[in-house]
Length: 80
Length: 186
Image (cartoon, rainbow over all chains, first blue to last red; front, side):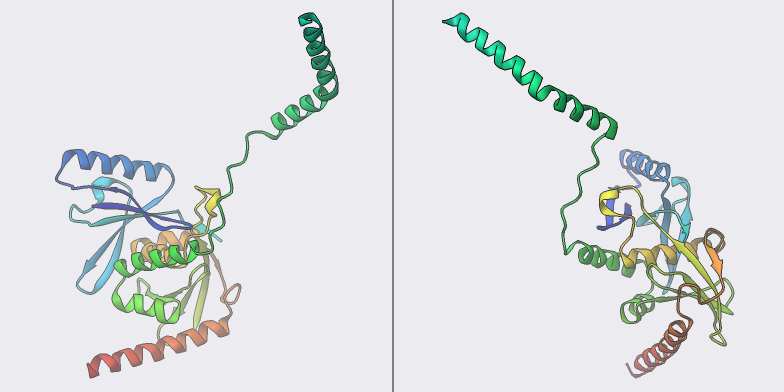
């Protein structure tokens, strides 16, 4: 699983990467996940069902599907 | 001899203190009043935004459907279905989201919303175009209500030219028609 974040001037940046079956990796992923939420970021998990693509917004690492390849962090929406 | 040198040094030091002391003190006071030094400005890189957009497009391509990615690459916007098949949204980079009636093409509302990233002032707040579109897409697919609640809603025409939006809807219909024809021929 990869945790990536959108960044101005960069595009996406990989924050952390790990195997969800390895305890140390999971700990690192959870730590980074929480850090991004503490920074105010939103987290979305891209999902697919056949050709149809969806996104699942999550607020806890436990809500991330175990088979998810990526979690994408992006800034919160603000009325313009 | 050494006494004469020592006296000379002392005299020079006193003269320097009298001559430069006040301006040094004033400079120190100004620096203290100005607070901490601002972060260094990133060196101008004319290719940075292009590379960022290229990376953002790769992320977009890997998340949305092939049809949606081609739509963005060829038309410059996305059409994202709403919760009800009767309406959908036109999603432009760094412009408001426009709701429209899918049957008649009538423009319904304009939702002003952005995703400013204030974490690094040196890089600015603006996400690359494709990231902005993807952030809107994920928010609409993940929680349409939450995104609409965060947006400022206006009648169509406040920021996006309704004439341009109608032309974009016509381009979209034509694009879909040609794509369907190509798919049948293949």
